[in-house]
Length: 267
Image 1 (cartoon, rainbow, N blue to C red):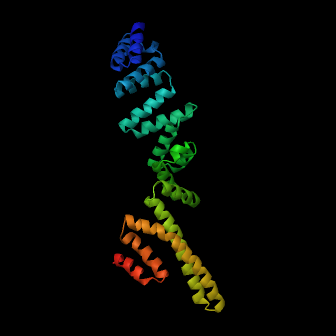
Image 2: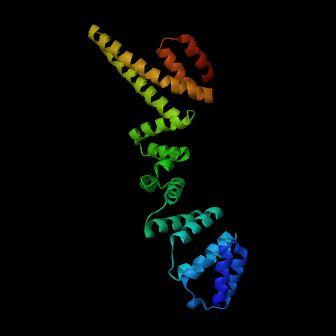
Image 3: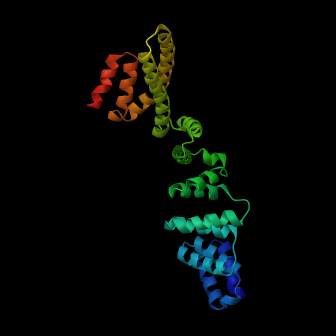
């Protein structure tokens, strides 16, 4: 019986995983389960995984767990198997087990946890895991996009401001980041414009007029900040979605020709 185990390990070391699996099967068929160490089942399961037999690998891993055996390699492999099977709940359980039972958790575990938490809308857990991810992983555009959207839902405006700029450095045509900055400056300008015009209309004095002119300079400055973002969005999607913003800006600028151009898209 020991020779079957030795044969399995020798075959696996030579890359002959199918042969190694057959040797493990012979070993287990002649060795009582209750007398077999969990580590042997885990070792055999890894061989089955490398041989491309995920079902057998999970069966043997289950035996190892039944024997209260666990190892980082075992759970890393289980996450890969469950991921390939599209079994999100089991993959999540394996990932969480890894983070709570082993030290030196690799970044790939935290990154995948972040992706799953985001997918299943567990935003608080996703944000907690974000702090444990490597800087390289955080700076991947898909992760930045997910992190940005989570913080939008959480109304963490300062975080969104900074992340949106990082996104635009990496992807100048990122629609979410462009829209965030366009709306940020547009809304600020439009709100100021309406507020100051209302104040002036209620109190048409020389003093209030001077205040209005100073405030309108600030309005113009913010509209000019919004404009480049809106122009890029227009290049990506010319049409009704952004026409209203552009038409209003040029109306505020007193450029009726350009305002009329965008107004045509609103009909």
